Length: 335
Ligand SMILES: NC(=O)c1ccc[n+]([C@@H]2O[C@H](COP(=O)([O-])OP(=O)(O)OC[C@H]3O[C@@H](n4cnc5c(N)ncnc54)[C@H](OP(=O)(O)O)[C@@H]3O)[C@@H](O)[C@H]2O)c1
Image (cartoon, rainbow, N blue to C red; front, side, top):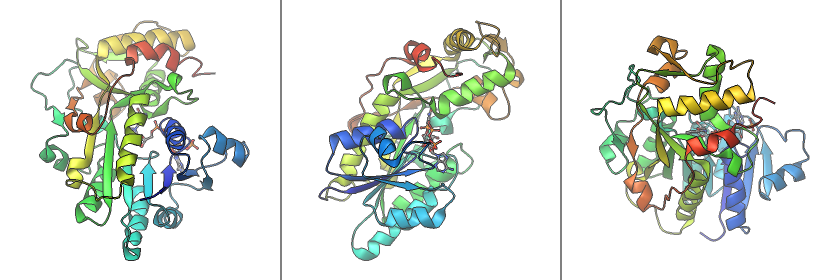
């Protein structure tokens, strides 16, 4: 495929913006379209420049099925870096990319999922040595992804579409993504937002048990580098290798224990907003006191994954740890 056209959903996001910039930096000759919710009070030209000099902007919402379908049919590669929690907008992307088949070209979809899928739903806050470790080299693990998981409905839709062979699919699955201070991000992304929002509504930063439960984390620069590597692979003229289930990549820069993570969150959030976070240390709580609904499970359970297939495909974790980055990442977040 010579100089492919690429459509990026979520291009203004915590992950999407540095991805757009890196993609245009590596491939100035590729035609990149950013699908954005609004131009955010800027001019179109200013927003294009912020996104690395993307060629086109399309303004729309994820709920606009026909618009996303139509745009997807017009692009060789679609990257969904905007939404993994519902089956939309990925269903519209798939419908559009499928239309390309009639014109003799195969559409390529790169979807960003999230490793919230793989928590063990423990309630103790302790490390559990017998918890399942999800491994991207094991296609049976990927076949166990289902609609009840946090990002299950979009994952299942993408995997099933890839399995038909109508389109080539790739799923990059990072864990909690951090490191925005190193990409100049103004937002903090979904992962930090969930954890800080939960702490804000509680009035304290929780951890449970002995706090040895493990959270997996991914530096945004490591993720974005890998997304460009996968996009290069999707742009190659040959058909994708292997099954759709073998093109699901588990990404991890490092692991952290919840007590250490909560300790740093409490210190930084208290520094940023002492009114909302009166204590500079975390609170040891029960599972029931760790948050609302499913969030309390994130805090008390283990997220264990391994990504040997991602490593072979070019994922190279080099970023600093979340404990080293958090102070800079969350600086000014409540201003
Ligand atoms: N950050 C993490 O820790 C993490 C971890 C694992 C997986 N993920 C997944 O990665 C993806 C991106 O996450 P992120 O942290 O980069 O999120 P983010 O910073 O909130 O970015 C989301 C992007 O989607 C756009 N968007 C949201 N709702 C929209 C709508 N209804 N219509 C049109 N555009 C809409 C946003 O536009 P605006 O700029 O206008 O808001 C933004 O560009 C998500 O699917 C997330 O689940 C994230």
